[in-house]
Image 1 (cartoon, rainbow, N blue to C red):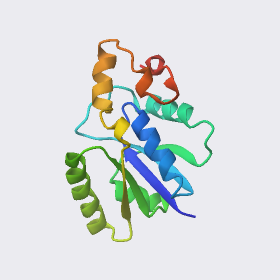
Image 2 (spheres, rainbow, N blue to C red):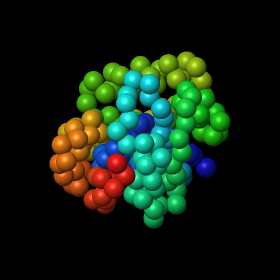
Image 3 (cartoon, helix red, strand yellow):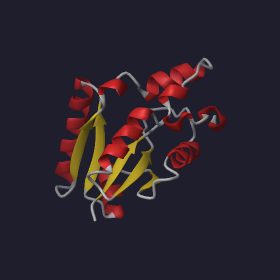
Image 4 (spheres, rainbow, N blue to C red):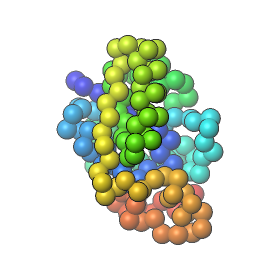
Length: 155
């Protein structure tokens, strides 16, 4: 059984994230969406509410689960007995950043591989950062959130 983690802050989880997960289910039998604590980012949604949002989005997909972690991603992978890290790439700058992290992860644990999927072109402009700004000013993010769920109820 091939399992992967899809780590990130997912604050909030977007249609771009959903697309990566659904496409990756063609490659992996199970995907754990792993919500990490990023010391560089201040959370907009609580981690608990991010978990609830993602569980609502994937309520019909039994091969997707959500967990939180507060350690190095490679250590979380070892703890979960997972050999693959899934990452999405929107831009060239994403690639440079993600490549450096993937190489460091591989240096730390050479049996863990990072798999990159390119974001679908239609999702390239969608980012959690932009959605947080829209939400901050009470804007409508429905078309950028999977299933158009009402994420404002989780604020």
